[in-house]
Length: 334
Length: 263
Image (tube, rainbow over all chains, first blue to last red; front, side, top):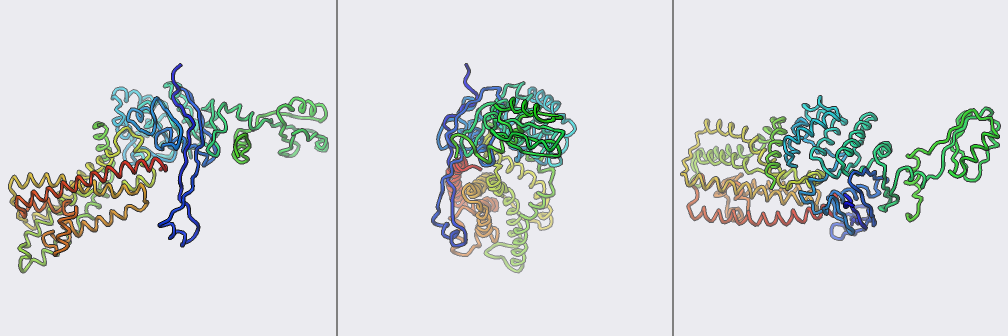
């Protein structure tokens, strides 16, 4: 079996941050005597990712996602632990390594602002030593996929955010990296542009077999692209598996929506055994029902109440994630 | 070495800058003003009699050369390095499979060409008005060109290591301001170095700033004899080597620091 594209073993990163009390005196004092505090941004994380896998990186702001991504890309070196990406130790930043990876930061541009994207792409290709024939072929493909022929002659500064993001992706992919780090690639884009870019990323992944790590706060990105998610919270690895099982593990309940004919009878609902009322609108009621209870509970309602309509749904993934972030439930994490 | 990538970067910077020529012409114009003012001051001061043997015409020649050499050695990139560190653009540069120095050198080389398209015509017009006298020998021209190249390297790397202090201190650009003030005083801008009074004159010989602008001009004007030229080169090369050592040390430690604390 081939070696995984990305191997992370017991990775930790501790920052030393200067700290001082409020006020002028304290700031004068800190001129010659600084106090430091250690902040553990990433604690003992391990995972591995195969070629061709697309993995969503989840976690609230400040969870350690970006720190981890930066260590994988080679922009930070860890306090402890091992990382191998495409056979290299990232933070040595060997040119052969850098040619195999690509990082897209949703809030940072790697385009030259004053010239048209086509010129920018040519320069990037030269830096990555892409042979000209191969480059023309790749560019044609990418331009078609992203439908961007019309914007190629405008200076980048005159492009809309969505158009610019397309350019960022092309610049990141034109040398066909084997590993792709996408940090919030759809930040600030409208729904159809998000969908467009998602399709494109999926297609690139299928076509080239690149390993992709994606962070995004838009769950739609993750749902559409990543069969596997890794969740980090307080610097620790909280979950590594499918998105579906994440919901089951952390929110083992279903939403049951029921519409009834006669409001007065709603009082007879058996709100016990973990069943909870979460919303009520006119004659429609929404309940949390533990998964194990769902069949019996639904049967009970259908038998005892004048039901017009009933629906059983999974809780929205956003809700599940929000619960995890805010309540920090979960074994092993304070 | 990724020369192909380096050349592409130079072309890219050219393309970017030619989009906004007028801005760079204005910058170049701004840099020409102080030496022009000094030219007029010394020109007026020397109207009745020569000062320390320098006539009006000598001052005109000196300052027109000063404008050229100052432009050629001025490292505008020193001002942008600190910004790249502070705003995180350094991340993108570190992720490219090309030595980060290429980015700076590319914009340096591209800049020189853009500025020169503006500065040379202006100097030519001024020369036509003032008729400066300049009759260098071939030997002086060659020595001048060599000294000019070292002057640029020295000024570039000296400013670069100062700018790299931004890895540790956010306001490192202030040091570049101090450097410009020292250059104004000691590199031959406020007055030709030979006219600087006692201690200032000694300081000018000892510190690196004279070797960044004044030294090549002194060679071309024929103010220096062979032994003075050789001593000058020794000083220039000595400072260049020192600067390269400081630069290398600061770059290595800076990147290590940067990748330890995050951009």
